[in-house]
Image (cartoon, rainbow, N blue to C red; front, side):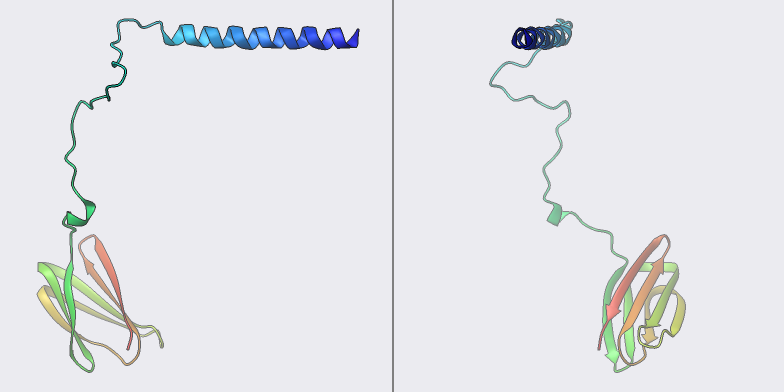
Length: 133
C-alpha cells in the first residue's frame, strides 16, 4: 500500500510540474505582434558603437612629467597652465609635510632625503606619485 501511495504522489507532482511549464510557455508566446528574429541570423543592435581599442583612447593627464633638477629638487610640469595648483611633498620616513601652491604650468619643489610622496591637486583631480631614492 505504501508503494502505491509513493507512485501516486510522484505522478501528481510530475503532472503539476509539466502543467506549470506548459503554462509558462503559453505566457511567453502571448505577444504575437512582436517580430521574431530569423533563425541563424544575429540580432542587429539599434545603434552601432564604434570599436575602439582601449589602449588608443586619450586619458586626461594633469602632470606631464616629474624631473630631477639636482639632488634635492624635482620639477613638476602640468599638462596645461592652471590658475591654482597645489603640490604636497610628504616625507614617508619622518612624516613631515611641505606644501607648494602655485599658478602656471611648472614648479620646482625641494624634497628631503629618502622616500617621498608627491601629491598634485588640480581642481577636482588628485594624483599621488611615490619617489624612492
